[in-house]
Length: 124
Length: 219
View: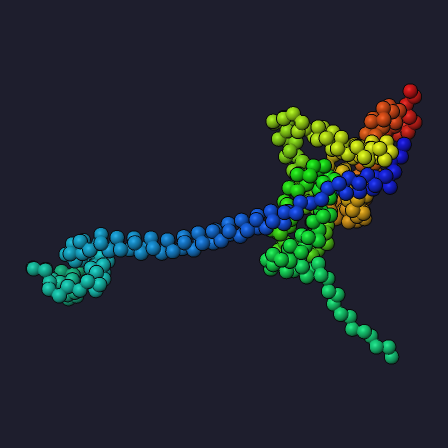
């Protein structure tokens, strides 16, 4: 028994002739493509928002840090680091940012960069 | 001296449409879709044998094509690529439906029932006019696995060449020939079973098993 190729063609064609694609197939595809586009836009805006959030969070943290440091400023000013140590540089830096016009009583002002005799003798 | 005519680039409207699709031109994609819609739908229907499933196959195929059209590098023809996606989608959706039916078998939804439903719907006028052979062939095509059915449909309905089929299913043309041969043998086998001809069943079984004896079994 041979399977006639012509018969296979005719059977397939008669089967295919019974059906047609629905008219709204393109609308369905378009809806999915629109959904894709909205998803992409949402993802993009989320990325930008995240960038803005980063900046806003960093600014907020900086402001909080400022308010945390502010009460400590006088303490920092008064702090006496080990003479000749690198810590003194911090004092100078802080004094440069927050200049003190009046020296604390009994102590040289941090802006007073004259070395004491002790410091000089240490250097020697 | 004969003037040599300057060769002008040939304008291929399909390539132009694809290039426009790659820039996100929705209208170009709609034109491409309209051009291929009917053929792809009929291919999907002949492979999955269910109109609703065929619509899903077509929808998923074109969505996949449009989503990845910017990666299309014109190394193969667009038609081969489109049908390759359609074949894969048809096989995937059929597999998914089979798994779903195995996990949750509802009466009247198995592939067997689906085939019978298609067969019964096909019978009324055509069965009167057509020969028994066509009817049996129709059933036998339904009994093929999706891969062999795809090859049969591409060859005998869409009239693809062996080279084009090879580009679609991603194998050498020699493999296409052997798949077609095997598909025809399977059709013969199913038809013989339908006809209740054990001798022909044995003959086709022998061929399918690649045994040397071609003599039909005695009744």
